[in-house]
Image (cartoon, rainbow, N blue to C red; front, top):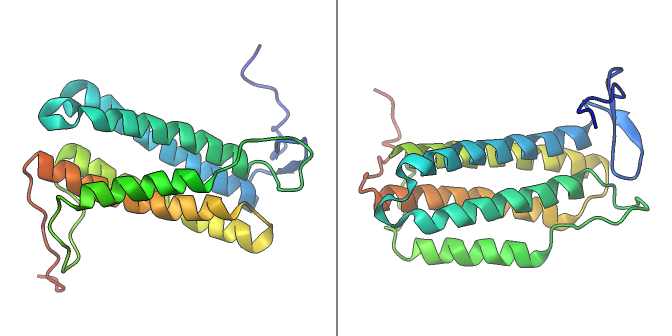
Length: 189
C-alpha cells in the first residue's frame, strides 16, 4: 500500500465516516494539534534512551507511552463527528480520573506553589514544560471546534487535565534530578 493517496491534493481530507472537509477546518486543526503533542512526547521518549533511566525516572517512560496511545484515541475521537455512523473509541472519564490520581500522587512530594515558576530546569523537565504548552494549544483548538460542532465533552476535559499532568510531571522530574525551580519575580530586569 502506498503512503500517498492524492485524495488530499485539493486541500480536503476525509474524516472517519467518509465526510470530506477542508484541511484547515476546526476539526482538522484540533486533531492536528493533538498529533503535534504526540510527536513531542516522542522526542522526550528519545531522551529517555540516554538519560531517562537515571534517578528513578524509568517508570515515567511507561506513563508517557500510555499518554501517546491515549492521544491516538483522542485524535480518532476528534476525527469522528458524534453523529458519524462509524464506531470509534472515545475519551472516557476513567482516563481523566487516572491523570488526576497521578497528578495528586506526584504533587504530594513537591513544594506547594506560592508563585509562578519559570518553565525550565533539567533537559527533560524543560521539554515537559514545552509539552504542557503544546497541550494547552491543542486544548484551545478543541475549544474552537466545540464552538462550531458538538464534540465529546471528555475530550476537552482530558486535554485540560493533561496539560496539568505535564506541568506537575515537569516539576517532579526536576525535583528527582535535583534541579531547583526558578520563581518568577513579577518584574523584568
